Structures are given as C-alpha cells and as structure tokens.
Image (cartoon, rainbow, N blue to C red; front, top):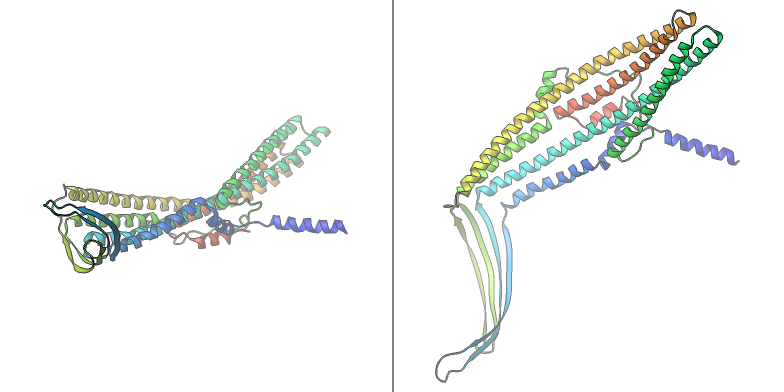
Length: 440
C-alpha cells in the first residue's frame, strides 16, 4: 500500500513543478519584486508631495511663541540716606501670530511649479512601468530562446547520433568509407559542445529573469508553434513617429520640464515685485506679584494689519537669478527637442524592427519547410547511394539552424512591438496580456 501512495505523491509533485509560468504572471511578480521599480514607486510618492508643498506657500501660517523669566533685581540709589531696592518677580509672555499672503507672485509661481512637479513625477513613474515591461519581456524572451536552443541542439545531437550509427554500420559492411564515420563523429562532438553551451546559457538567462521577478522558473510557456504575427496597427510609420513626438513619455517629461523652467523665470523676476501680507497677533504679557511694589499686572494685546515689503536693491542677486533661470529655460527647450528627436528615432527603429522581423518570420517559415524537405530527400538519397553522409549532416544542420533563427525572429519581433508602443507612450499591462495570449 505504501508504494502506490508514494507514486501518487510523486506524480502530484511532478505535475505541480511541471506547471509552466507565463509572461503575465512573471510581469506581475516583477512589479512586486523589482528593486528598480520599487525605487521609482517611492520616488513617485515623494514627487506627489510637491503639490502640497507648493500649495502651502499660499495658505496662512500660524505660530505660537512663549517665554517665562525669573527676575531678581537689586537697585542702588545714589542719594544720602537712600536704601537699596531688591525686587524678585516672574514675567510671562505668549503670543500667537497669523500671517496670510495677500499678494506674493513668487509664492504663486512656486505653487504652479509644485503642480507641474507632481505631474512630472507621475509621468516618470509611467516611464519606469514601461521600462519594467520591456525588461521583463526581454528577459522572458531571452530565456525562451535559450530553452529553444537547448531543445534544438538536443534534437540535432540525437539526429547526428543516428547518422553516426548508420555510418558505422555501413562502414562495417563495406558500403561506406571511414570518412563518413569521422564526419558524423565530428558533427556529433560539435553538437555536444553546443548543447553544453546552450544549457549554460539557460542558467544565465534564468538568473537574469530571477533578478527581475525574484523567482526561479523551472518552466516557461513558449510561443505557439502555429503562431501568426500581425502587422502593427496603424500600419503607418509616419503615424507612429507622430505619436512618439507628441505623446511619448520622455517627450511629456520634457514638456513639463520646460513649463517648470518657465515658471522659474517668472518666479525669479517676481523678486522685483512688492509683497503684501495680512498679519494678526494676539498675546499676553504678565508680571507676577512683586514683593517690593506689592503689585503685578496682566496685559493683553491684539493687532491686525497689512505688511508691505518693497525690494529696492539686493546686490544684483535678483537680476543674476533671473538670467540664470532664462538660460535654464533655454536648456529645457533644447532638452525637449532632443526628447522629440530621440522618441521619433526609437519609433522608427522599432517599427522597422517589427516589419523586417515579420518578413524574416515568413521567410524562415518557408525555409523551414524547404529544409525539412531537403533533409528527407538527402536521407532518401543516402539510402539509395546518390547522396553521401556529409550531405545528410549539412541538411540536418540547416534544418535546426532554421528552427533556431525562426524562434529568434518571432521573439525579436514581439520585443520590437513592445518597444514601438513604449516609444509612442501607449505601452501598458494590456499589451503584456495580448502577448501572453500568444503563448502555449
């Protein structure tokens, strides 16, 4: 009874470990684990506080101050017969002050900068999310490609081993030369080395994926063998470039940076403007009982008024900061133009990568059919004596090389599609789910 139970448990554990993870699962785990994205999330939380900080300079400020002092005074009067006077008493003081800006253009510009900085933090977090999608997808695709390489080299090694055995049998019966055996042995040794290298590459790529998602994945879902990739929509490079130049997240960052720089110019120029504040105070000044004067007092005071400040000269600092802000605004304008150009370039490169990748996929699919036919023909020719062993080996190499290139072309095309949407600023988890639907 124990053996069936052990076998059942082993079967269940094997089935659990054999469950393959998909791209969407890996991405969601990376969202919770990736340190780079966690840093971006914290930076976003910090950046949102800029709006509250900017608003604070427009709101009233209230402060309380108080003190208490013990006084021990000795007075000596310089007159004949006059006595010395000694006084001990305690004075207390407190006041509450409220200040409300009525007109302060610098503060208003700082408030607008706070709003823009919060928006900038949100866009930067979007950039980090898109970057995470691209990094996870690339690591996932690299892992799939190395696993495909292991499978391909393993199948090639098996096929060459069969050809090696056939060459040995033919040599033994005298229908082939030792050259066929040596050629097959050389190909078998080469395939063995390639398989070892591929297995090592699998370990490396899985560690890369682990560094992003925090887990080691024994099995990953691969692309469906019958997969048909479609062209990007819209199928117009000009529209993708236009979207990248207008809606790319790096372009949005540049636009916000230019607006912040413009507000900084207005803020520094406001250093020449007067400021007007409403100021109100309420306080009490108390003196305790004095042993000398046999008296004490409590004095309450309330004040309210307007406080006007007019800057006249500050050593040229205000004018210098104004010139500095203008120069930084020019830099922000140049940075925005550079962001537009780089986004357009990225969109063009990704679009061409997708379209050329689709063409390569179609070509490799046709080449795979041709390579399979060529291998079968060479095997038949070898059996009837019109082809030699090296012809079969070459046909095998061509077939497995085509399989590997087809897998690489498909994965590269999908990666370029994600990069294209990232350049246009539209990449999201929905795109990850769309690619996930293409998996087995």
